[in-house]
Length: 318
Ligand code: A2P
Image 1 (tube, helix red, strand yellow):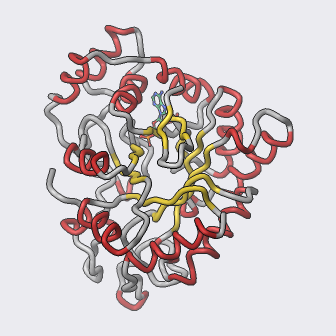
Image 2 (image 1 turned 30 degrees about the vertical axis):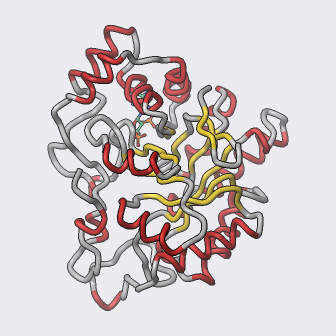
């Protein structure tokens, strides 16, 4: 499988298993099926509330010699409530305990949004004091300490735009090595992608299939469907593929890691098989001309009345 290469030569398999929205009761089996199918990259996060189950599966796979720890690439993410310098390492240690690992391959700041300690999701009422004012440079310093302590091999960010990446790059000796953001044919983010590539920052695409299983509370009515899009389906039909495989191959063609989530054994295998799919220049052009622009995870849950954050702070115009 194609890999992305970090500056020190470490490699990350370009397809990983996504675990956002995978229920605790399903994710254990999904991770084992994925490892059996040949996945070596698993994308996790503390806020997904399923890291213990992912850890049980990793422990079993390693104990039973399905895979060696050093063959796996495991990512996790720091939640918004642990942005203070002194909270970063304990948060990573908790994740390591849950995942039953002694190091991560990649640790990311999940959002450039800072909550008070203990807050899970944004509360809309002022008395909950959801937000705090921790500069990103402080959180990044905590991430660098994690690296120095050997708790993770690489550090990066998620949901960062160009100005927030620049803020960190100006304050720190080490730039983020990865930016994990929403990327697919409805949201190619060419400007951000080019900025990252020009600055040696690798990219991972989340919600590559349109995350149709998001909870109703964060879905808008009448969302356009990536998996049912006519351009995507047309390419799939012509090549004897599924729409999901075309969407995964689109990311691979852009040298962007991609983390489709599935808890279904057949779809887990099907998504990995997209590693062998090559899209032609004409097919990539047809996807570039798809004519729909849509962001599924727009971050509006962080921009309520009492929030200091605005959508325009989170995302730049294309
Ligand atoms: P399931 O877990 O039942 O397979 P995203 O990765 O963009 O967040 O999308 C995840 C959603 O896409 C889930 O609802 C998942 O369902 C579904 N999905 C995953 N793989 C495929 C596939 N190959 N074909 C169709 N739907 C898929």
